[in-house]
Length: 430
Ligand SMILES: *Cc1c(COP(=O)(O)O)cnc(C)c1O
Image 1 (cartoon, rainbow, N blue to C red):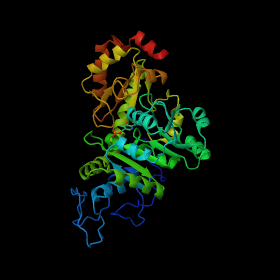
Image 2: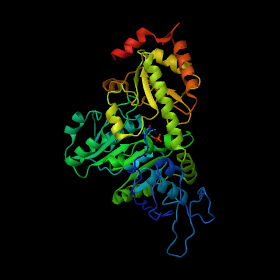
Image 3: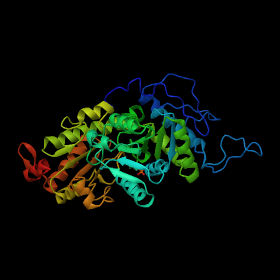
Image 4: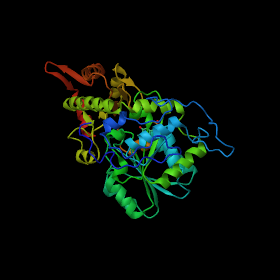
């Protein structure tokens, strides 16, 4: 985090109403986000400083008519409630809900739609999001319009009183384009006050951005990524301010049974406490690597670089640049050789892990988008995505440099490394 969180962050948020309140606060002062991430209040019966895993499906009731705070884990579980309260606090929300994955979160959210409803969304979406929306379009009679949400002038004319939901992701991935959440939210609500503006905040995490403060009605993220940080669980978090909306989403979770399991709730709770230091280190590394690649002539997409065409827009919304960047080599075969020649950079989809990862989105995470659509959306087939971890940055650069040389992407000279001109100029003209 480069900037100190403002007082607005975490200020004046009511504690989340939850199916079962567990840690009400008495209007205590709010600390900076880095502090709030590790600070928890529990009223555990034994004073456990880490909320236990309530590995139980049922809870004994006090009378024949119920009466217990919890009755059945599909409906509520103390470990999950504790996590939900903590996440609501961190996401600056009135209520947060924890489910089994990021896609599970979007499934719950899109269940608010009815046949004939219209969704306006981006054209550089997470592959799984694209797949679910295509299913809804083909089978559930939902109208889905993919437009360039990174250009306010393009997207606004699409909003009408029929717009039911606007689904945004910023920065987009792998093209790292920025979406102007406040302007789009305002225009969508002006066209239809009931339109739900939904933001997938996975790429930035609550450490760097709070979509609910920018006019979004729902903010959700994959807990599999930065929130947990170790690629050892799947989780999804949904956050809202409107309590009716929160109740509707909770209804879906209770009805379908996709609430996060107690064990995974515990692990996500543990993971999120280190979000601050992980993300700080990851984005500091990402910045150095982005500058390294750019200085060697590659076309690099990263909002931490002044050369990013939407640099100012990004920084008007976010407290940091994140730790995902992409670059082009001019040749898919060359990109493949680079990816396969790295050792420290694990070839893997996903991001947000403490380990650094490398991938070719068109072959991996975005392969569920067909080649024709990828071409229409100007997704370069040679694009390499780097998801930067917490390793020593010099080791990461050494490893990348060795892979670039071995793949023939850069040529060795007395002065150092120069991008292979053919590859670099091809990348520059794209
Ligand atoms: C990973 C991811 C998702 C889906 O989350 P899962 O936990 O994998 O289901 C959604 N959106 C974005 C931007 C992601 O990176």
